[in-house]
Structure formats: structure tokens, C-alpha cells
Length: 547
Image (cartoon, rainbow, N blue to C red; front, side, top):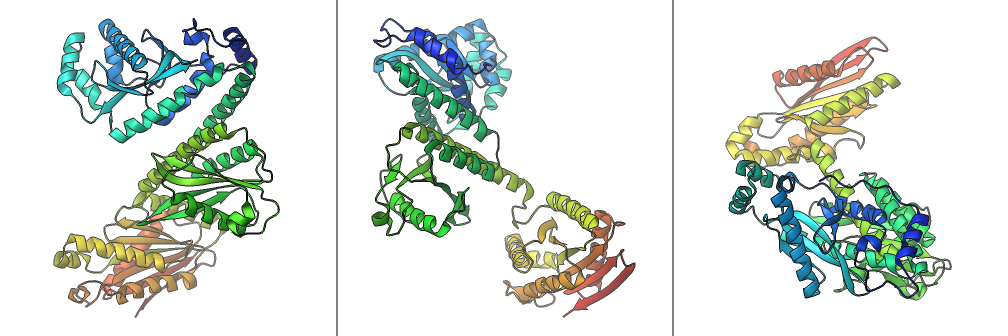
């Protein structure tokens, strides 16, 4: 089933629809058709964004079990079943049965297994305490694949069992905590609908809020760059609250611990705000029961600071699966009661999703360009960077230097100590190279135990000291069992090319560096061989240095 395409209805049209469904006394108890109570186009916009966030089909249903509005495409497994009339009816009857049970049980969330063995989550939509519809999230594979049930369903519907098994194998398995988390989100989503059918004035405010939410959802989904995502969030928070300052502090994993990173669009007194935020974070993280929003008004007494312009501070913990991933701080110059608290909470929840998505995108991109063992750039990426840096050097007529290095007798170290120790050696050498290069230098694993370093804007007088610093740092480091190496220590051979000009390609420079590396090997190892190619002055020099 294709995702329903809708155009966003104007506010005036929505108002007219609400006027039709709303009387001065409220909504009639006789009304049980949800499509006559809310504006479906508006609702689908919200539902679409939600379904995209959790990456599952989400749909609005009525008491008969029929879908009114569907967001996100059904997986092929469900499409196969729905392609059969018997399967389609079974799906509708399954939803109808569970709708009835949800209504009778009067619960907020119902988890159930459908006739085909997939997990579903259903939450009620209530108007004036009367259930008029439900939101269903489907096509969830829980714990494991019940192949026996899949075969039975295939036989009942006259579908090739192999095809249906292949289709169910394409579905990712969801963990229990994912189901509970999605169920909670679905319930929160279902509570948005009653807000569309309150008194007329409230409706208009709610619709304005929904437009804000919809626009914000589109904006935050328009980018997967973390800095851009945070900029969008901060701009929205400031506009929504008329804040004099707003910032976001998020946790960033750093190997074995967490560090906090602060983002803001402002250039106000950084130290003042950091001191306040540090105190607030310590206070919140020590609490057992988190609030949705924290408000502070006695600023000077609370934080032991002097300030005349901060009258109120709002702090919103950003949560993902009951885990704090960061905080939003809002600084106000008045203490008037905020009418946008509910909207602020929704924006904050969407912000948490946006931040997590951007962080995960960044991690995935990082994994795609990094060597897992050494945490250096991989060969593909480093060659792309070499191409970029060479073009830049040719354009600016500046030097580009390349270091290509190889660990002496690395196979001997592996044979004597085992490959795990060899991996540790390579990892530590990579760290030593990072410690002894410049901040702008680009380091990558070229292959095996070969490592390449690109030194932009570095002539031989700048590049050679870096190469020698690396060589000596490795030579002097007390690696485990280094005395068993042929030279009595762990050493490296280095080939260094320092080039300026337009006649050499990146392959030419790699070949020259490699030739110089082997020149160092032939000269007895633990040496740096270098060559200067300056096409601008027609100068080609070659030399060699060693301890």
C-alpha cells in the first residue's frame, strides 16, 4: 500500500472543518466518525513525520478496523498478504477484534500479535472520554521469526511459502525496549488529536501549533549535519520563547567517558552561562525522577551570580529511551507564565530525535572513512584527500609533502608475539604518529603496516622534522618484547617527498614516496629518505637522513 499523499490544508479551511464538527456545547456523543471530527490532511502531516522517525507503518483506523490514513510503506511481507482478498480481510478483522478489546479494557496502549505473526501496537483516540478511533503501528518482528506460522499463513492464502519466508527474513527484529518506547510515543501521538476538537479558540491555537510542529519536523529532517540540526533547534527555541539566550549541551562519547559539548548561536558572556549550566546539570542528573521542564527564577540566589538581565531560566532534559542525551537551556528577561510549555516539550522531543539521527549519521560517515583498528583514515578516503590537497597545492603554487612509512620487520613481531600483539603495536604506532604531527596533517592507513601522512603547505624544512620526530618517537618507545626485533627495537622506514608544481599526479607522488621508503630499507632500515621536487624553480634534490 502506498503512503498517502496529502497537501497541507490552509488554516482557514481547517477552521471551517472544525466549525462544522464543533458546536457551542462541544462534540455530540453521537459523533463517532473520526474523519468528521478532525482534519485528516493536517493529521496525516503529523503522522507522516512520526512514522518516518520510527521507520514503521503507522495508520489511523476506525472501529471496523479499516485504515483511514496510512503513513510509511508496508513491508513486502504485508503487501503479499494484502494482495490476497482473504489476507486483506484477515488483517481488517484482526484490527477490528483488537480495537474492540482496547475499547473494553479501557487501556492506553495495547500490544498484540496479528494473524500473520507480526507484532502491532494500538493506542486509542478519545474525544469527550469516548473512543472514536485508534492509531496502529504494525509490521513489527519481535524476538524471532516464527517460520512455522509463516508457512501456515502461506498455505491458507495460497502464497508460495518460499516467497513469504524470504519476505519475513527481510524484516528487522525489534527488541522489547524498542516496542515499549514506540508504544509510549504512539500514545503521546494519539493524545494530539483531542487537542484538535476543543473549543474554537483553543482549536485555532492548536492548529497554529501543529503548523509550527510540522514546519519544524520538516526543517529538522532536511539535514543530517549535527551543527545544522542544532542551529535549527536553537533558532526555533529563541523564536518560540523570545529568549535572550539559548544553548544546547549534548553528551559526546569519548572512548571510556562522556564529555559535554555546548552549542549556541549567541556571543554573550560564555563563562557566565557555562557556570550556570554546569550547576543545573549537576542538580538535574542527581535527581531520581526527572521533570519535563525545570524553571529557575531566583537566579542570583540559586546560582550565586550577579546578573540584571536574566530573570528566568528554563532547562529541558533531552531524553532518548529514558536516557539523558543533553539539555536545552532557555534564558528569559521576564517571569511571565509561558503559554507554550506543551509545544516546547514537543519541539524538545523532536529535537532529541533530530540530534540522535545527526549523531548516528556522523558516526556512520566516520565508520565509512576510518580504519577500525588504527582509528586512522582508510586508504580510500586518504587517497581522496591526497587528490584534493594536490589540486589545492597546484592551484595555490604551494608545497605538499607526503610521508609514506612502513614498520621494520613487522612480520617478525607478529610471528614472535602473535597477531593480537601486532595489532596493539600498530595501534600504538598510529597514536604516536598523531602525537608527533601537526594539527592540519592528514594521516591514513595505506595498507597492512604502511601508513601515509599528508602535510599540506609544508616544504622540506617543515616536513623533514615531522618525519624524524615520528621515526625517533617509535624507535624510543618501550614496546613489549621490542628487544626480540632484529634491530633490538621497533623501528620504521620512511619515504618523504616534498613537491611543488603541476606536472606530477597523485600516483606519481605515491610511487616516489614508495621508492624512497625502499631506499631506506636497503640502507639498513630505521631511516628517512627524502626528495624535493620544486618545479617552480626547476630544482630536484635528493638526500637521506638517519640517526
